Image (cartoon, rainbow, N blue to C red; front, side, top):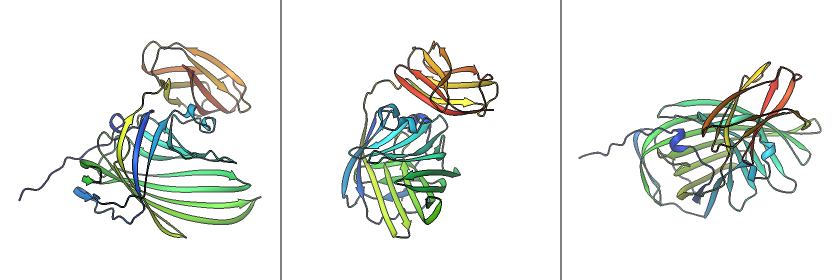
Length: 327
């Protein structure tokens, strides 16, 4: 009897990085699903699922969201249609960093990771793995929460997966295990702490901008819950040019000069500003782009006092910023 043989895929920036304008459609389930075996040449069958809801999500430009200034490092936002939740990301050629979530409610709730959550590296292949620690301290309705998290991300399997929508050959499964501890304080007095673990299994093709199948298992003091979904379709919505993206600075902290790299999708000037924590512009220069794509330039910061600043780039009506430290 002949057996099916699949080829191992690799997750790459060019093939899998989400793009502004992407729209994804999901079917959701809360039933108990077995994530199945790890290893090479596997076959997973989820062709029958109990769908309880459907929805859609979009990748947005942060400048078109309510909390762009609270997440200056980010160049993408994941937003579920019909909800108040905005999930902020920094996409680079080498990884996707999750900088936190914001909820457009009354009052608003902002969870900003001063040490971000690295969700994936590019490229990523079978048996690749990394561990990451990340942290947030946020205040909501007078209570301060310190959120400490550890995640281990592993490409633990590859093969073929079947959902109610389709069968996908040559998929890579990425398993993420997260432990999150929230310690809650009121006026400096410790109140309580909770710990939650998440086992997240995501199946990717070599060209999908979002997983085609996800199983989530959440365990806490309240018990175990399940959050699963599969993608029914996706599309790219043409949106206004992003202008600038992929902002990187080095060294950071800096003493004399800061080297700046970024990508641009037009030939309009890029204004580069250094802004202090009061919002005062301390330095400004214009960079004239000649070509599309990656750009590099250097600015002098030796006349600035030591401290924390924002490096702000403006182009074609869009802005992108990153925190920098001057010694």
